[in-house]
Length: 133
Image (cartoon, rainbow, N blue to C red; front, side, top):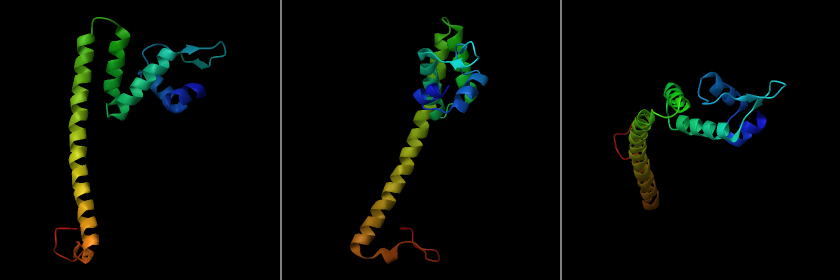
């Protein structure tokens, strides 16, 4: 378990959660002593789940994707549609973050400019009525 956690970059708790949540596409092997034994295929799949989750895909959608993958051939169009919809969501969020970053970069430029000009006292402060700060 510890090695699998290390190799996937997630905690042992997360590995157990992914199993309980139905996100793992194959049953995880167990040793004679009952300890989990992950194969490379399991670790690769957990990495996929982790990356999908990191992009904001809901657990229920990852579970649906896992169900489709586990079911095998014949549902590739549904898998594709699921991934395309998520890709569009991620692209929209990324565009929003980029717009927010533009504002931050603009504010940085304003501060640098005012500091370089020596008139940083013109920056907005509570009680003042300027829109540059």
